[in-house]
Image (cartoon, rainbow, N blue to C red):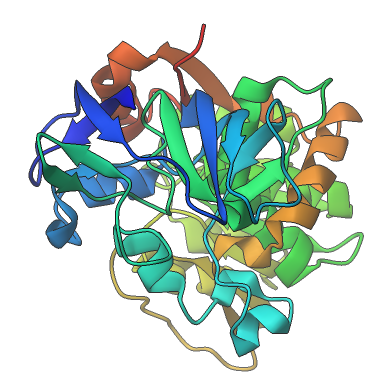
Length: 360
């Protein structure tokens, strides 16, 4: 079928919305009419040419929409179902069978290999194969994805809002709720107040952290962090974050820390904000992790918030409905045609979580 998709033809090119061909879903696959899709920092990294072998590529991995057709082996989804889309995992390897699909042995191939589960692609343009991202390619009007990628969305939830739950939002929230699991009354520092960091901050509030310290370099983000539950904020361009955190904790440092800056080099700074038995959740990004004196600290590498999407995303939706997780305050909606504006606003920090709307 003919669809519209945002194609990136080569590294550092802008998105170009063009007509492409989408093949029918295979046995374990589902055709989804995309309603909206979040734009993630990972999309920017891929546009810049990391994994350049993917080009030409249709990115997008925070999609939401309505099921139109299903393959003959799909049992849990039917036409008309409202869904959001998350990570790809095989469901068969040792790690998946242990209930940890976020560390699937096939993670790299299925999410960054540019192809579907069977190694082929569903997207072509003038006979040329187009790669995808996370087995979604949700920067498009339609997507064919594997049933493992999908999570049901309740009827009373704004479908446009749910796409970012599939990656950025669950990554930040899961780093706290699933990995760090801070005790009520404990302290935490969160470096980076983008979508991932803000989600971690809201999760810390849910856990009952008594002291929540947010670090960023953009004052408007720090203002929102205070609104969402931060007890203290630090602009790292104006003061030294480590000494400031130490001062806020009587020289002890915090119990927990999250590096959500997207830069591994900031992990060293972040862990120095903790006390000597502190725990750091390092969320993947660009740059190698550089740590200071570890002492008895614990460093945890976090992928997708250690989340089982089909379980965790409904939990986040319930938190949202109860007013405990107002992640809608992070988003701004853009028309699909304005994808390059949305990408620029995300990169500059003007918008925390852009959401592209395909179906108005």
